[in-house]
Amino acid sequence: MELGAVLEAVEGRTGPEAVERVLTRYNEENQAIFRFDPADEDKRKKLCEGILNILEKDAETSCQVACLEALRILSRDKKVLVPVTTKRNMQILMRLAKLDAIEDPLERVSEFPVIVEALKCLCNIIFNSAVAQKLSLELNLAAMLCNLLEKCKDQEFVDDIKCFVLRLLFLLSLLHTDIRSQLRQELQGVQVLTQALERSLNVRWTEEYKAAEDHDRPLSLQETDCAIEALKALFNVTLDSWNVHSEKESHQFRYMAAILRHCLLTTGPTEDKTEELHSNAINLLSNVPVSCLDVLVSPSSQEETDIKYNGMNMGAIQILLDFMEKRIDKGSSYREGLTPVLSLLTECCRTHRNIRKFIKAQVLPPLRDVSNRPEVGTTVRNKLVRLMTHVDLGVKQIAAEFLFVLCKERVDSLLKYTGYGNAAGLLAARGLLAGGRGGHWYSDDEDTDTEEYKSAKPNINLITGHLEEPMPNPMDEMTEEQKEYEAMKLVNMFDKLSRDELIKPMGVRPDGTMAPLEEAVCQYQTNKQDSSDSD
Image (cartoon, rainbow, N blue to C red; front, side, top):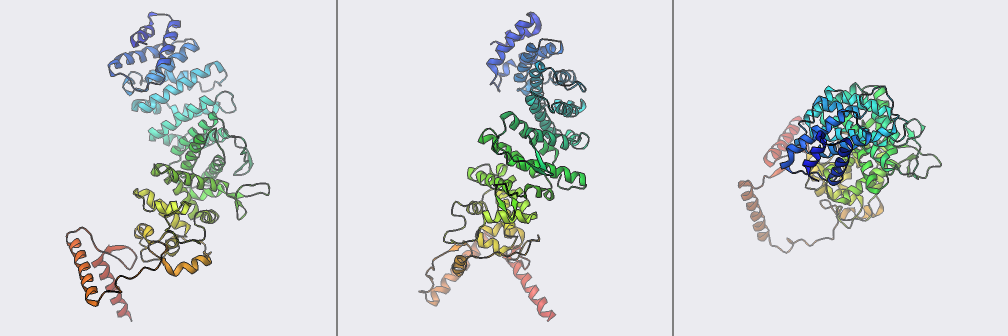
């Protein structure tokens, strides 16, 4: 439909019924349009102004919905938002979204489509306009959204309203740091959003920090979308919350972690929605102080048939492990998709002994067959060892750190499962090339080697980490003169590479860190001299 005809109808040259009819047709034709013709930019700006003039007056509900749908489509274009992002226009949309009605309950179901469309418009406008983001702080939009969210409690037919309120809170807390601080400190945003998440997931408590598990009933699409938006908003509001200073804060985060455990054990309407739900739950768990993550496991009852370990229900931890393996198998976007769950599992293992022992039994079971290299195969261990040499530094570091923590930060244990070649990067970064262990304390329970591993151990190549057949020594058939010639040839090659600065010979300092060879040798000689002087 011609934009000029739409503009003519909106500017008042026809009646309200014609405006509604024209806009409805325009909306149907442009529903999937996200790129607009630059030549029509001025017409679209005028159309936005005309629509807002109609919305300022009392129009029929169906006409308001048509106007708001058209404004939502137009607001996808950042360039037309200059006339839209004024205080007056923002207040018009806030009024239609019932954000200014502080005391009035949501009673008229017929108005709900108008509220939803007004919230959608605000989402687009705030996302695309820095001016609108500043106006949101000035107009105290976050407080009004929290109030509307409270009105949705125990109300029917408001899932769409709740979903877009939560999306707006997510956008505001993402795009404006002052609003994020306001939500956290003034508006009790953590508590409000946690309760919204709890209602979306239909949590029923059986005891403190333990929810009833209902595996037979997946969430509906609307419930899943609401939960996802609440998780995303909570992630922003809880950034930098590692340090918990009060008992009240500790309770709030443990309560949140218990809801997130329930979220991990819940499924959505489709496999993709379930993965999106779990992904956002894992992101939020990364913000929860590690001391509060013990509620991810709970004492198992006799009736429960879920995965148990040492009398504890490990169902949520198994979900995290399965999610991690699924993300590894995807083979792409490791930094965004894999590192959050690996970081979470690493911190859980570092702090909670039962979780570490359960995960180690899954990821690093006792070695029996060492005929293949650690990175070759389809087990979780093989997949993680392959990541230790990934081109992305962040991915290889967190994968190596996870395995190191499972080995209680003991170098000899890590090398047994990965080989020295795969672990060299981590050991160099941690100053542990000479052996030893990391700085974190772990329980003293010892690993037990299988008989198969013990018998194969003398023939295992420490660099590759697998059993190799004895290879013939090529020097056995050489004369002494030939050996000396080959040795000098190798020395000269290294010397040339070093002089041309193509390589830099390195050594290991007494403290286990890397240093240029001359410096490392000098430190060893100094230490030896000091030792002999003290004798």
